[in-house]
Amino acid sequence: MKAHIDDGRCRGHGVCTTVCPDVFAMTDDGYAEAIVDEVPAGLEDRAREAAEACPENAVILDQ
Image (tube, one colour):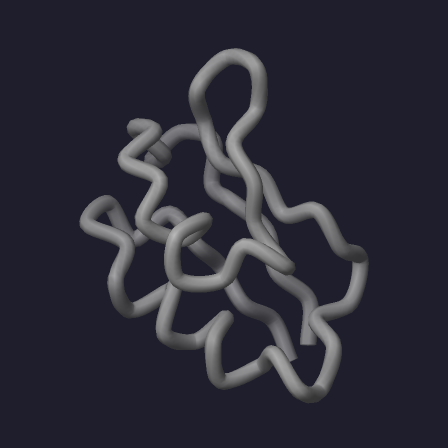
C-alpha cells in the first residue's frame, strides 16, 4: 500500500501524524506528508485509521 497527502486538501490538522506517526509527519510549512514510500504491512490498519480520521479527506491510500 502507498500513502500520500492531497496537498490541495490538507489544512495541517495533524490528525494523521497523531494516529500513524511512522507513516505521516508534518512539514516545516505545517502540512502533512507521507514519510515512507510503502506502508509497512504492520502499519496498514493504522494508515487506514489515519485516512478515515482526516477531517479534510487529504490522506490517499493506494493498493
